[in-house]
Image (cartoon, rainbow, N blue to C red):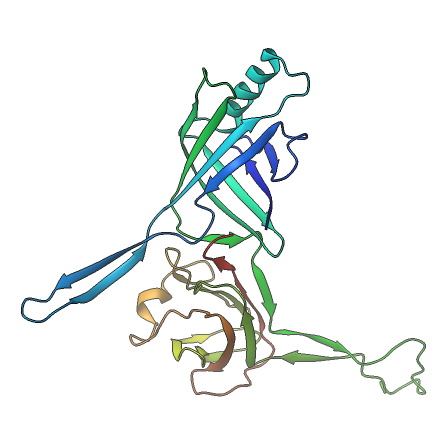
Length: 297
């Protein structure tokens, strides 16, 4: 069940609309559309001889959120009602950009769009304002990206401790680890790309990352030096490969049969190797981040 719809306008001001309690905001949400899965457009070609059609392609359409808001005012007078209408002009200015955050019992998602209309029937017995927001993106996203760190230090002792030697180092304070095989459990419904950030600790000949769940593999044929920073983004519309801030690797060193890795719902087994297929190329600082992409609230 939807709990709240929060609007953040272009001035970073917030209006929180509680579904069951209008007293704080001054508005009832009488109805809302466009918060569920997006519509899609399917292209098919009719067969000329036999029955039916042939599927060509499909795409998710832009999202159109429509909110119908009825006013709640404490003293039941016209001035309060008019002030509430003017307040909506401020939070929903036509052509203004707004962020929409929807909180339900089990998830919190966001999207952003542009106000298409802000219309009120001024002569109705009970004024209701209809807000239409057009969103470029068909899907909704989690509020923050998920981050998976593939390296770190495991502590190997607890206080108090005793070294039992004045000359030898007998206690191992910690153990550096790195996951060359790592499983990511992706809970959202829509496939998503990933961001990979890797700082090499030693000279490394080539880099390969593979999702064994999808079979996608990305290979970069390049000799990396210590402290080189490799950044990879496989998210649709943002795809890039940079080395120390330069995008020269994108065309020159990327294997021509490489794929842009994606995560699918469920378990994704990520495999990281050097160019020779080895799973030990020195201490490397690496993290993988990705957005949770949802069909809707």
